[in-house]
Image 1 (cartoon, one colour):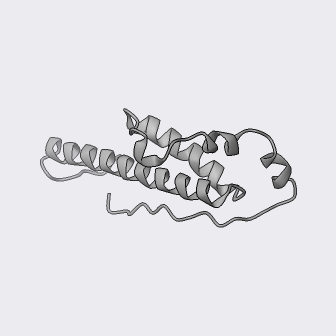
Image 2 (cartoon, helix red, strand yellow):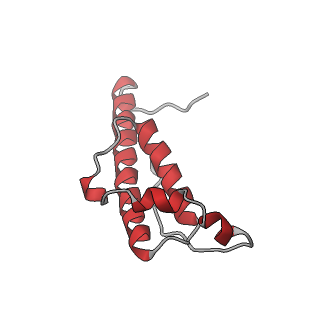
Length: 107
């Protein structure tokens, strides 16, 4: 688990048709109704956090949300990323204990 996960801000890249897609009430409305990240609880499982993070990234990558919503989404993404990372580190620690502190390659 030596790899570092980074959550960097999306770089808006617009292709034809993106503006039309954003006029539909999907990601923009969902994020507009989302409370600030500090008031949201973390998901119960790694899988739920990862699913929420993936959906959030998809919305952020469109690059068409107002700045306030982009910031809120970025902050929530950082929370989810930290949660996922801590869960993975906990599992790695458990595997080390089970393997006698020596991780063995998966074959």
